[in-house]
Length: 472
Image: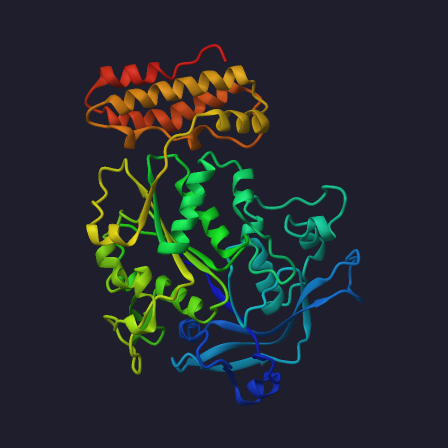
């Protein structure tokens, strides 16, 4: 996104070795201490970007605030500088170290990884950047009372207010707690898909490595894809999960690898998000990684995936099946997808503009259909969350099921164009049922129906009449 800047927090100690901070500063460099990890990430660091040497650990005593006896994650900032040259070998950066021997301590929002890329488009990240590079103090009370840490370190009152976009999912790879996640957690969150079907999805993922969730709009494909990814990885708040959306303009060069102009005007071979995930998974064989591809049929999957279309197969995920890429790096003998990288795609079947998925792609994925679920589980969830009466929700349920049957029976539409339950699923108390319902019908469902019957006003009127509820 234009205007967003990236800052880098780099370790100077690798795999139990000696701290290299003094050498790095003396030689005006930073060097990746691993032979086969983080190579592509290091190559992506641009000349002119700011970097910091950091060390992350836990402290329990002698803290400048009341930590209530709990260990606190600390990131010590030792030096800051600017990249003057990237040798593009995945190893060596030349750095103009502008401030050294800082030993500034930053609390809570930290990262254990040897290389942490931080962008200035998120409130917590912005404060970290200001603290590290622009000498602004950390507002410790703000962090203590932020959603992720409030239960352990926060004040008892609700005096502090936070931006709506600060969420546990935004907190990067915390060194204190990882929230475990399994099938039981998914069901508790309000999933209206049959538990047996979800178990089949998980089983297929473990066996096939690749699945696609397909269905009408509003059936919770994205919601479920993210939670299935959490199950495969084993916990929430994970950097092991990446989401990408395909679109008509996406190419192989965007997704896998291609040439990009660098800051010095030269073309540099840059790995796309899929290759980055492959390298991360290969370098961390003890963990699972998941890439979620939204609207996988909105682009041209065969063209975007290229050689990966073959390598995705579960029985091709070995070094012996490695293939040479279209854009090959020097000394690169071929590439394969590791067993610990999973792919979850989503498809909206109601979009007429989407291309058909070819048979080659279908052979490599297990497909699962999601349908609207205005049923008993939806009713019970809505009663608990919204405090609406069963009588009111029964009327809404019957109206939507009646409409969906009408859409299904329509020869030019069918079940792929039905209305999903996500449109009318809410997780907070609803004070005025009729206003809430009519707002969603008028702003979200009616425009969709107008697209369905743009050339037949009588059928459109019949469909809309099925949704009229005057006595909620």
